Length: 147
Ligand SMILES: [Zn+2]
Ligand SMILES: [Zn+2]
Image 1 (spheres, rainbow, N blue to C red):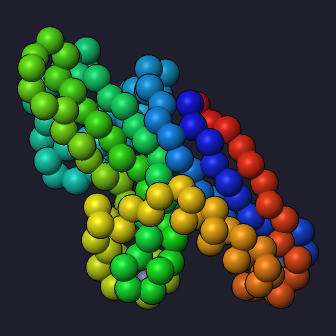
Image 2: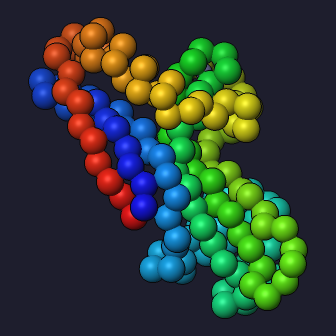
């Protein structure tokens, strides 16, 4: 279970969502395995999944928001923790997100760029004050839950 906060513009439809929290991927596991196999979580994750049968691996995902160290843009991303069932091996963490910031094009330093939720909420407040970056309209705030 996780939660998130979003801002949206009623006038032009511009929107941003920031998610937090953890969810067990029992129902989405196959879809996750597919995206790992497709390379979305990097080469290391791809190799691990290809070496193991799907019932040998336990996946847990966490949605989070990263902050670009260059321009402070907030970017949604996902952590995936993979654990080999029945072993004492340390779980491996993979990150799904672009390698470069969509706003400024600079490479992202994901691990260092993870902001805490309070910082994102502060940022959302600022966005609400400033208004829509596309049309200057009034922004609305929304909250949601995901699992
Ligand atoms: Zn707008
Ligand atoms: Zn940036």
